[in-house]
Length: 137
Image (cartoon, rainbow, N blue to C red; front, side, top):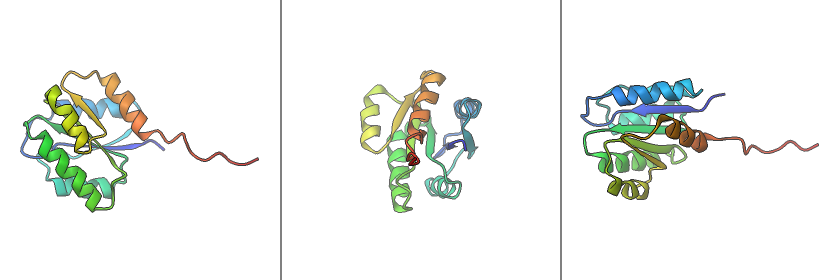
């Protein structure tokens, strides 16, 4: 069963071309992708993530509010007893904010210009379930 990824556009950011490109690249790489559309509330993103049983929430943020929005999503997932869902964030993110996003709970950060192959590889690593218990002979 393919890993499920939620691609979300939190806040008032209305530009979603990059999010759609990422969603398509993940779909083409074999992931099951749920795309929320633009202008989503953090509470709605978390509710959809839990309902759809996703492994990863990918936040696409171009508005400059990436630190606050990422932290709010991570906190809300924990409050929903869904801390096992990885949060990744991409968009217009200065390199100086990457460590801050990781400290806020982001499992990966993809600033503008990150190659799609890199993004797919890192999402695949986050969702790798090949370490399932081996059957005894």
